[in-house]
Image (cartoon, rainbow, N blue to C red; front, top):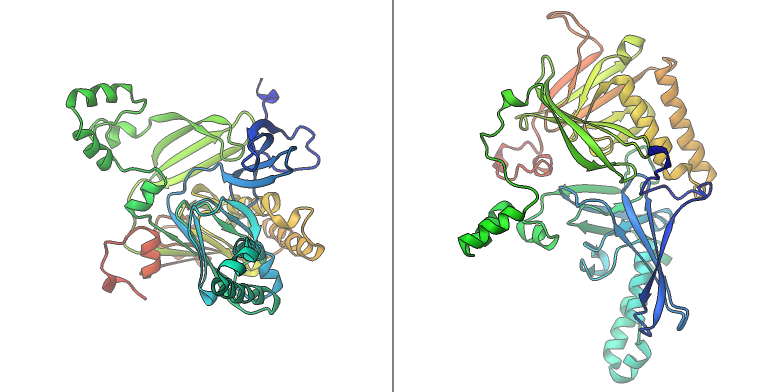
Length: 457
């Protein structure tokens, strides 16, 4: 029965008596005798699903813990640039994958990707781990290579001064898998000290992650014998579909169904997909997923067309019940902002969806309330009160006790807000503005082949 099933990935909760950790026997890398490894599948709020691993050897006392991402590799890599200005910045939580490189330009520190295992730490923890690595075997080094030992000690002093003397510095994390994260203590407001940039991976970076384009696979297959290729293709579970196999006329009205994983708990479920047309807008692909295990219901909308020539920005005033019922198509590249609450949501936070103004507000409130660090036991009371006040203001907006403005900004131009005006009349509560994309916005959308002189700086 579905009610007897449990989600694969669950939040760490003291009230959950059945939180499952897998205990397996494994070899100790220190003494090579048998130890125990415990695996726990869980979720990080505002981030992704992860696997926590903890090892302990009862023979030599060796212990080790690490983290691995259980989420799929993201479509784009991520580059996070954080300016550290206070002790609060040093205490920011950081999640980094195996493919994350870390650099601090002020002290010429560079930690290459795949040189350390992924982990959950803080900015200060990254510095401390680097210091421990540099000072390892320092006593032997002083005897055998005194000059090198002196240089290392001088460099360690620089690293120590970064956290002890409160010197402003910059930490840059670049992750080609897109699965790294830095906590925003100002949430739901925009983080003033952190810049996040998503970039298209190069071919070599895709291959490091084990991602190969069809052209690479085809060229490799052509180098082998044609007969062996045909036998190999027959064994493939997924086979390519010719371009003319399905036309747009065939897809309209057709509901396609495929197996997928629940975005909330990771359990197997089914997703329904349909191509439809939104009046006065364009064709879109609607995907709906219902999970029988955790009860999660999600809908995602993707544009059926390409990227528009210009970006688009909507400003909607929410003052009465009619304003809450406006239809809204938010694409996966569209960011949201409510100036009255100093609340801003990035494009990937809520994904693409077709809903109403009220539906957008409910989704923003639920994500802040259900997945925020600030409602956990580890959060301080001041942070909890600040976040609680923001959530209460969402309730007041939906109860029409507080007037607000919802701003949708989509550089791809694939979002839409319904106008309540009839005919050619002007909707005074809806402002629509098209704009030329900046160079960075074009790069985020993967439009690297466009000429830079066409960009508006």
